[in-house]
Image (cartoon, rainbow over all chains, first blue to last red; front, side):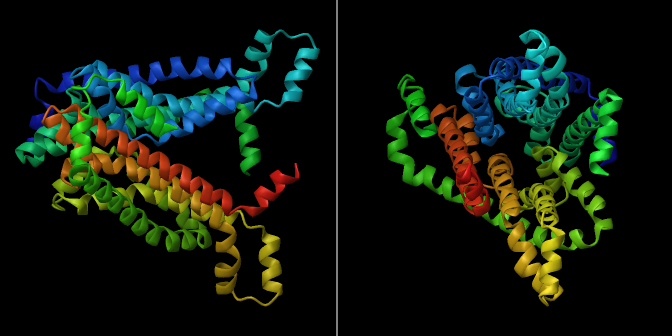
Length: 218
Length: 233
């Protein structure tokens, strides 16, 4: 069994599958950020806009990942574009929710005080709202990224390639070694993503915030 | 609104793209059984997960040292992509069909449910428990008459997240012959029949959103104090 798994991992086609999986995941998450963050920024000072953004995000989170892929598929057919668009749509809700709520967590009095001190809207954003919101936005990106890596596996069903191909091949041929090689690769990639974000979060949390968090939880 | 939007979006398509006649003629034979199968998979899974999580959550809330390892194990299960988990279950000899799908769905629900049971019990103020003890209630009575009822809204919030997650992942379970709405999607892809693919996808989406909204209303209903506070404002 172990030999079969190693044999599958050493196939010349394996790096290509892995690379497609990584590409789909990274691009999907990045496009998700590029769509959600500007929207959250645009609605940050209007309560109604922010409420709509959060509610759309909440509804979007409920949509099953395979349903998203299946809805895009009839329009774009087999290939790279359909899963990429579906994964982007999957990445948007968590980032949108966190960015909208994070930017609105800044108390209105603080913003008013800053405005009274003569700060421009741009300065209020870059010096007050963003520094407070960035950790929350980052948490949203983490949720999205882990979800996107997991769902990129499903791209195989609409011909998108990626590591899901091995699971489908192993399953249809009844070959447990190929099935496990695929499943182990996908699971490892998901766990790696989780760990990577954990490390990033720890590295980039400012010292002052860490102390504040410890005090709050302690 | 979601239904109306979906209907408009589908109607605007060319007729050969979405075959309304087919849908009307085959709804009760092909689509409806898939809806029922999907509901069955989801409800059974959340039910089993709840039967595990409630006692385990109560236990862990008491014996705090167990909480971190329980969170680690259930969190690990939650991180494994669903298609990989189903593949592991097949490889482990559980076979195919609804059984491995239900096992997978239960393992995804544990993290959220156990966490919310513990958070819910934690949210009960110590003074409330002291008062109950002062009134002569036993530990068991405190658990069933004070802690769990007060924790209920948080537990329901967990049930909501678990249910929506389970409805979504059950779609993927059709790959290992679990049945349900995912079967329509896979059949549609195999037969190159977009109507079937879109019907499965839209029905699964509607079911997830409906469950989300319905359980949110239940959750709100269970927090009468929150409603009152909002009314006072």
